[in-house]
Length: 217
Image (cartoon, helix red, strand yellow):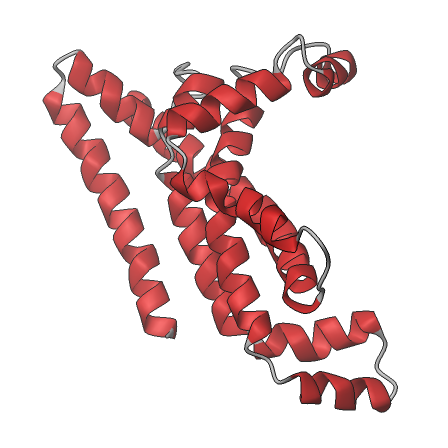
């Protein structure tokens, strides 16, 4: 009972943590670029970035299966490297969680970067700051609240991901079974006590994360 309870909790935290790191890195980089660059097709590209926020999880899961399936080039490439398909693995859960969480990180970070007075950045460049130093010592500190907010919200979203994860990673106990999928199986099998324990756990974790977001504002 104890091991069966903690396994999905541990896996959910690990998946959400790694997905949060991936989203943090790519979200900040892309948000910074999109906040300052103007080019043809920018609106279309941003719409693609934000699509996972509104698409049904089943659609996201379906697209991930199509992209990373055995018949697709990315899927074949990964299978050749690791000698196994990525579907129904721990990494599949990470990818699914990262995809659905990315829009929250991207939009929050982009809002933070857009709120920076360009005059401050221009003054830093006049004083000799290169692109990297400008980004690291000027832009990031000025947008830190938005970035932290996006990081927490996207991690919370990754923690609660269900539909895309179930389709793409499956529900393998000890390997891909996260708290949301474990709750679904527990209810389906009539084990309401275990389901309630997992529900209480994910509510507690999510409450702490959302409280942190409210606090830093």
